[in-house]
Amino acid sequence: MSQILAVAADEWRFWQRSNLVRAAVLLLALVLIAAAVLTAVQIVDDTHERTHYQDEAEATFLAQPDRHPHRMVHYGHYVFRTPAPLAVFDPGLDPVTGQTIFLEGHRQNTAMGGNAAQREGLGAMPSLSPAFFYQFFAPLLLILVGHHSLVRERESQTLAPLLALGLGSGQLLLGKGLALAAIVAALLLPAALVLGGAVFGGASAPVAAVVLGSYALYLSIWACAVLLASAVFTRRSTALASLLAGWLVVTLLLPAIAVNQAALQSPTPGKIATDFEMQQELAELGDGHNAADPAFTKLRDELLAQYGVTEVEALPVNLRGVVAEQSEADLTALMNRYAEDRFAATEHQAAHAARYGWLSPYLAVGFASRALAGTDLATHHRFLREAEAERFAFVQGLNRVHASELSYLDDINRNTSDEASRRSRVSADNWAVLTDFHFEPAKPTERLVEALPALLMLGLWLVLGVVALAISSRRLTP
Image (cartoon, rainbow, N blue to C red):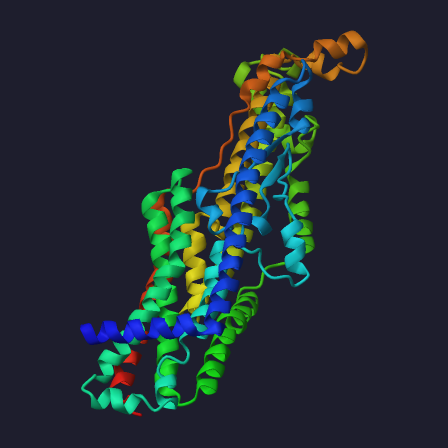
């Protein structure tokens, strides 16, 4: 053990004397600090801003004066998704999927928030965050620091004397690996601080620990790759070139291939074609604003028979409100069917891309990180579903007010005079059908289960790296 520690200590002394190592560490440390600070400030600001606007939107809705209930259906309401606590480490898809939705009757709007999406469309890099630093830049530091660990011994002709003095090739490799593991541990310290801050802000401690563990696996995989290249190649330039080529393939080429192949394997219909098809089906449902539409004849006849009357004016409920409620239910069922088909198609694409994690640990750690942080595609879809449930609930609540609180005669005559218009208004107390909306990440166990396949990929990659190192150690020669 003392020999292994001596090799590790010698490696650290060499790094302390290397200008390249010092410059690389300083540069990437500055990048990491900037990523952590900028992301933290942005997430904190977004959280306060969206919470404020959510409260303001609810207060504005509830403060509306007495008016016709269907006007409130069209007045609408905003909902905002506040960032998950772990978004301070990995914002994931949040910047490109939108966090605000305007809810209104008869339609489902998309989430808004397109600045980052526009940058992505122009080919810009993903937003700088601690997670992106560890996924993309940290392997470069390990490559620059460790690519010459064993090659240097060959080039300086010290490998043969070391082995001749009784130092086993396995011990030499373990010593070099221990030195590189210390670099990995030092790299993870800022991540631990950021994640600790997220836990203080409400994140699940076990989930944060698994996030840290996933990046420890990822960087350990790269440490194994660096040592393996240094053990196999006989020249520093060859080892460095091979590692940089591998980094480019793993972090840039394979992700691009994964995205393109996912789109080819699971194509999704265009929005225009889908909207046109849905509009054709919507036309068959009838116009919910027109109680005389033939589509609602059966509903009207059933109501007349139920209450034993022959005229809609004699009904104890407002036919127009009942029709609006039925129409909204049918329309929402149709829109939800199209929405779920769209969700399924994009989730199938994401699942196809995730399988490339078996080829690229960069993809594997990204999928695991986003799932654990609650900033992945599944979380975005859950936000859309919960927002739609909120929309449907308050719209149907207003439709029930329309049916029960407003008479049919006052309703159909509301535009005949100012007095008739006043009689068609209901009390603002009825706006309380709106409930508080607060989006929360999925439960920790659900996120852990979601991330498990990607974590298994990382585990397999590390096992393969350790096995490859064990084999190379037996063949380590001057």
